[in-house]
Each structure stands twice: as structure tokens, then as C-alpha cells.
Length: 93
Image 1 (cartoon, rainbow, N blue to C red):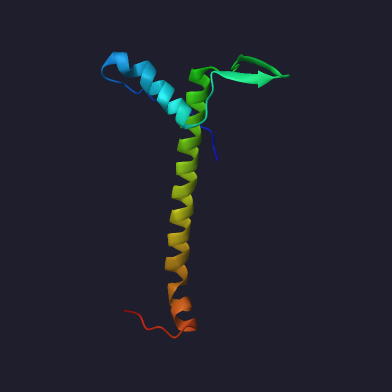
Image 2: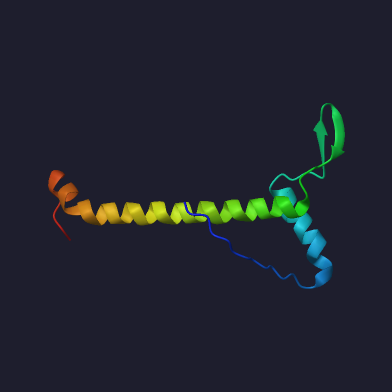
């Protein structure tokens, strides 16, 4: 897949909900503010902003792949439907 730069802005209203919404979003995807490294609990080296960007990028990439797979399946089906029907002796309707 070709990498493309894009910008995405999400505006939350009211502004006071921004932190709570961001925290809820990240918790939904497993982000923790502290992690254990070498047996010691430390502040997560991955910032909330980095984690959110990673989740959004993954979502967009997965959506693009799913779209392409679905489009490919539909194209294959259209190209092969007559042969499949003939194989199973099903008449076109």
C-alpha cells in the first residue's frame, strides 16, 4: 500500500470534554498511562497523542484493505458468476 500524508482534525464540543473523550478512546484500545519495564512501573513512553495517531492510522489502513478486498471479491464474482452457475447448473435469474 502506498503511504500518503493526510491530516485529520476532530473537534470535540464542549472543549472540557476533550481530555475525557481522548482518555476513553485510548482506554478502549488498551492504552495505559504506566507500563512495567524491567520490573519497574514507569510512565508509558508512548504519549497519548502518539497512541491515538497509531489507532487512527490502523483504523484507516484496515478500512482501506477491507474496502479493496470487498471490491476485489465483487469483481471476481462478476467475472466468474456465469461459470459458477453453469458448474452448479443454476439458471440466471
